[in-house]
Image 1 (spheres, rainbow, N blue to C red):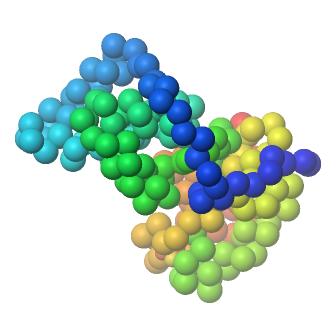
Image 2: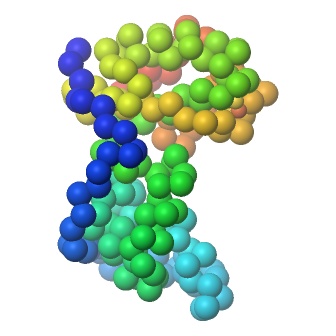
Image 3: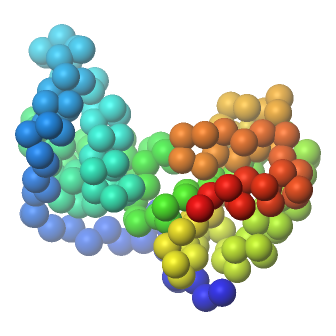
Length: 177
Ligand code: FES
């Protein structure tokens, strides 16, 4: 199966001044997050708002979405990018409908991560960092997801899948319709 060319998080970001627009319902949701913090600390809402923008922009943070947040929170655009680029849960490029994040850190590594990664990538016909041609799956390697006691593990969307075996992986992928 062919795959899109992989891009890394350090690839150039296409910068534009375009500002994303959101529905009144989404704006209300964002305001509700901001209201949880003291007025002078509204930037503390940045991470929950990045999640909202990522969801609304099709699963990743594009330039117009980031520009919107900078205006909304009265921040510099670079302030928003600083946070967006620090955390692996924020996607800086389009991802598939099922974003598989495989932990590559020590506990997972010694408990079988390489075999799990090979199995998943062979099955999907892609390499880490790539998306299947049908846009269904993206595989990303990430650092420790804090579930070392149940290594090897991976995250798909917001769900953790732990104590992975190749048989377990097959069932998980099968369930991803
Ligand atoms: S090392 Fe994989 S979850 Fe911590």
